[in-house]
Length: 215
Image (cartoon, rainbow, N blue to C red; front, side, top):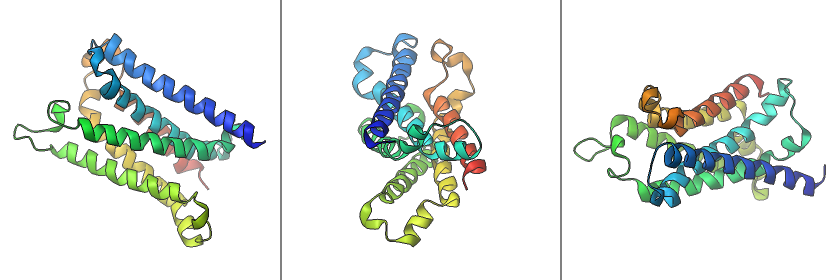
């Protein structure tokens, strides 16, 4: 498999994933939910970015274990893992920056109590999100050439135990961010599941693949 083929495979997966994620956000909130189109540039696209980033990271972590479990995974997808993971990390960074710009009681009312302070669930979600971002940053450092000789660091950051706990942080972030909306299907826009729930399903799939398939 040559480098050009690897890049093309990764580019296709990234393009399709992000297009579907942002498209789902537009469908659910604008078309089915009636959210004003003025909110598209930041609020809605940011939701799509978060979903797409998690799917890419889930693919990065899950493709290898899926192959170990005997699932049909092409060599091109295996070779695309690095690009998927790094792209997912960059999209997480953009998602975090936009979320920071938008984070206020006016936009995320359910995360704040009447006194303007974060609720307990919101605090747990934000803490897990920050820790998860730091973990992803550390994981991406393992791909840097100047750190390849540090066998102790590389061995720890790519170990099964580390990755299982790293993935768990992403799950905690999603769970405490959206579980209240998951339990009320009558409030789902157009009957479409919340983006946080869709992302959580991908997280669970990736987590289980790593739990049972990573060597």
